[in-house]
Image 1 (cartoon, rainbow, N blue to C red):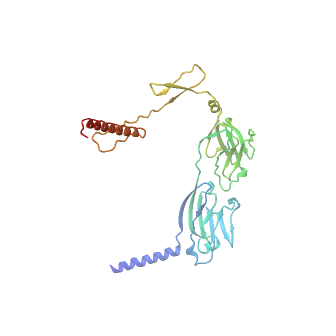
Image 2 (cartoon, rainbow, N blue to C red; image 1 turned 180 degrees about the vertical axis):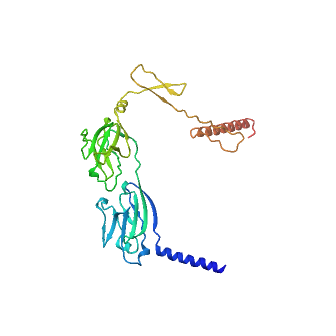
Image 3 (cartoon, rainbow, N blue to C red; image 1 turned 90 degrees about the vertical axis):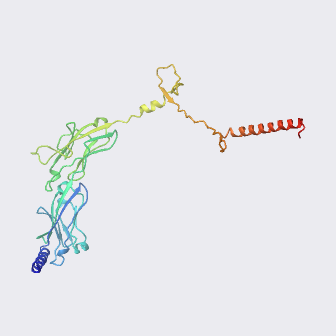
Length: 332
């Protein structure tokens, strides 16, 4: 039994040394909302004792960020959205990559590679589309922005795309303007990023109600495709305060009904509105006097002095009568 235990222990130690030598790569699965910041983790502290090297990030074989000296090299299409930690943190093995303003096209598999040869960390990143209401209701004379998201590859340039908005099937705005439109100055396309093509409407009018759709082409030969969301239904509501102002200038007729507790007094006119007002009657329980009770009698504040005065006067009168009778009988 003892030799078997020794063999298992030696095998465990050998496997531990082998695992340390291989430096098993880290695996991460991340989800982030569109436009948010995200950190792609990479811990290279196990490689600090080996030959010097620096962070090297790739996405499916495509260079994302490479540290050369103190300078971070990355392709122009990333627009400086990837950032490496400070030099002090990198010396401690923190090679995590920070992505600012995540785009739909950033959904990919990223690898943190040591000296461009050995994978230290693998990160699967998914960028979620933001939630967009498919039906909107806004007041007239308001400022409105209708969102439109168009996923595209990193190699696709927004300058080579055709994007346009339609209202009830008619083109109202286009980018870069190659699609005929209604030349409406109130409705314009404003690209918020390389994947966001918002339609701004200012000010809103009652005639703006309808169905809006964002369409795009990656080239002239392609068919038109809808963006996200596929369509938005807009309702513009008019706020009218004229009726309220006229109602405040209208004479009121108050009526009284004795049987129902409402007041009704009919006025001979066919144009004035009749308004009924209900009067609430509060019923108060009478105060009951307990017989043979030692508690003092409580009455309303206005009646208490008169009751006491009456009792005192009656006692005095009765005393005077008794004294007169006794005096007449010569008892006193």
